[in-house]
Length: 91
Image (cartoon, rainbow, N blue to C red; front, side):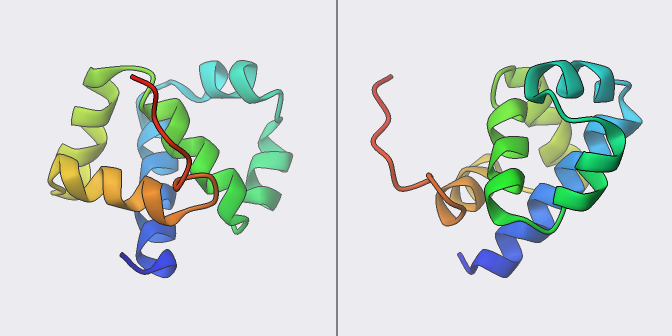
């Protein structure tokens, strides 16, 4: 997957987080306030963190995939295309 496509998926995930009232939880997890989130939205490393956050809960992954009409493997490919996505998974 191209990085640009992965970034679009991650931005959609960020929108999903906001629309599902998880933004406060995301802010708590990242330490970022709303202005910092807006400023970082174009940073591939930050977008990778968005997808990592979503992957904390299976139902969140399902929600993002349903909202964007994505297959789960497409979501995972997006994460793999962003910084840190090439690291080995131990689970």
